[in-house]
Figure 1 (tube, helix red, strand yellow):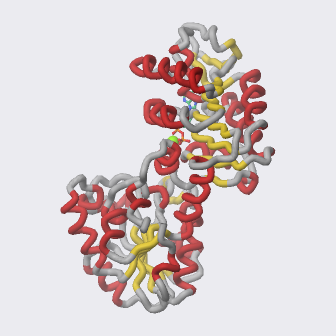
Figure 2 (spheres, helix red, strand yellow):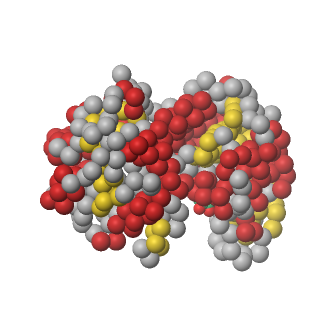
Figure 3 (tube, rainbow, N blue to C red):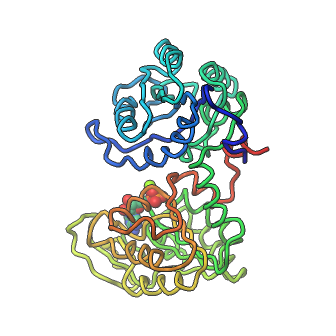
Length: 396
Ligand code: ADP
Ligand code: MG
């Protein structure tokens, strides 16, 4: 992967940077600026080298239309507070404001352009449409730095097409993410354990096929566990269930057995009659979930079992909470996995937006994990062994 050094001296040059500023907003206020902070090292490196930095970024899903609630204006304000260089905001992406802002931009300063997804061509499936837009972006810069890790699995104009037009390289965040995730996926120190959970069950089942060829230990919790329990013939009450995936999952159970992968399912679960913070919680064996109850967390025996398995691992990748951690009564499973990684000396990588949020919300010190990824979908696709278009385009 080409790095910023490959671009040579950037002093006085217009450097287009793709950043991931897709932050959560509530009533126009940024509730977690983690992604803006994660973008700073690359921006500081470039501005301190005397580059004119022009940032392309998106926020939310405006679906190709200009919508005020998806404006990057609040991000421009926060970035201005966090960056050491002055930040100028263009009120369009490739229009008059963008051209004027870039033309007037002094060396060592930053211009943030408005949401790239206000233009339908950004995410178009039509290669020619995306390329036309990328050529318009290219008029604003001399070189391109790809640093939006959260979008590198997308074949989009500001991620992929632009990198084919201008001299391009990976930014510091993308390099750090790829290094960490490759360390945990390509040639991991063994035993290699993967913990999967969360609620996007069908999305994540695809990962398992690949992991069965790589991991030594596979711990399954969260909403995904119930499709596995059902595949073993157990009743799962009103728990999350992907009934149409049961046959596929039976195949995974067989393959794990054939390959000698230690696939571990919950032995007990915390159930409740409703998806509610105040619902009365009880612990039942995993093969005895009552018909009118749903599993909302892994139980105490499972927490202990998972912690034991994790303690034996040298590499752990974790994606997806073990239960509905947003409700205090169902957060212990997620807390137990986080604690095992936080206290352990293994190489640990956490991917997934909610998993990362859970670790922070439960009060763990982020520095006690080897790496917390800023990209959910991108990190999952790396676990899956997929080639990411936004990375492939930066390889020599
Ligand atoms: P990530 O963002 O880390 O990839 P997901 O988006 O797949 O994770 O899932 C996160 C969500 O999964 C959380 O909001 C959590 O409440 C939910 N979840 C975890 N376990 C269960 C469960 N047993 N039933 C329903 N939802 C669950
Ligand atoms: Mg999520």
